[in-house]
Length: 239
Ligand code: SF4
Image (cartoon, rainbow, N blue to C red; front, side, top):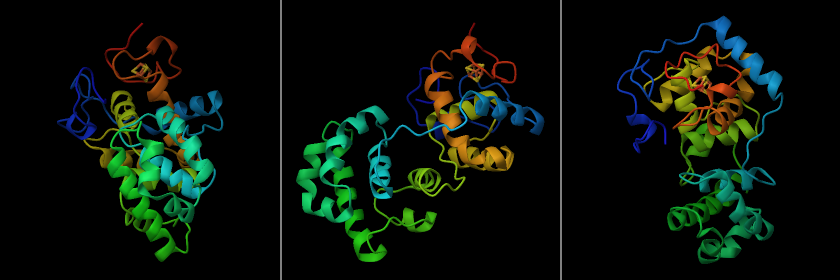
């Protein structure tokens, strides 16, 4: 979750722009020079950051991202390794059918609704998109179970468009550090687009998500191991 000891979604963790989700203290949007230094360090540490959802083509990436809502990437990968071995195209997914799909993904939260959506979106891909995954946000978001975040992940990871999908990790990191300050996920998405230098924009999503997942974690950030500690504005850094 996006804040200390709270279970509310990220949208609810900030009352005002510029307040960290953890403390409520004001954090200013980082200036250009500092934000550039942040991303230079991320780049030096990991020049080609990768997402952790396993996939073999655009379709399986779309399905994996749709399945990952409120689930861990590791949990999704465990289920999809066997699923994608038998259904890696919309046609094969329809052949597998909803109950067959449920059998593969029942370890993932909300699996019944997700199975319905994957079957529906597979049918729509065949009927309206020649079986291909579209590469516009509007077309992606017209598919069942595909919201702005899922569409942005597909645009970024498959089409290499610098779309910024903001999840709970990125929302927290952006507001704690000052890299991208905003009161809700859309505002943080805009803050990343507006402030991250364009040469770092494509990989910003993965640098921020991995930083939030492994270093700037929700409950006790690992500030002692953080490569941007001196640039971060968070007032309650750990030792
Ligand atoms: S110093 Fe701490 S709070 Fe700031 S980005 Fe690093 S881990 Fe997060």
